[in-house]
Length: 192
Image (cartoon, rainbow, N blue to C red; front, side):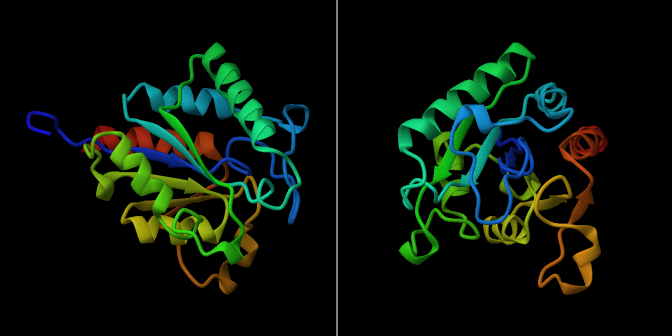
């Protein structure tokens, strides 16, 4: 769009980054099971100060597997957004892939389909090369690389630093949690 300057965005995985990781093969199936990780609301509010669009990009195959309904996922999202807003933290949009791996869709991470959708929804005015994807798995790192943005791996969910020698891909940056990552992103942006 003419006159609109492309700005970097921040893409966040959900489970293990925003809320407590439910465990391998398990899902957050209702709002009662959703637990924010420490300092997440503060981290998102901090990122909002830079006026960069923030998006959630998350695989939620539990819907396709019949473990929980689309309505339950919508209720979790609605409550998550309300809780964030009460703390001065805002997300531009939330995008889920509800397919299974065997469905071979273009939106399931590690493919970059959901990031592309988010960029298009923002009228294509996102500078993807200066954008960050924050996730807690190597799948998220692969997604960042596929999309062409910078990857941040946090250790508040699935992946652990002790596994580093077995990683098939290296993230651009690593932090303990979203709050540490947010502080880094804010400093990084100020340095530009």
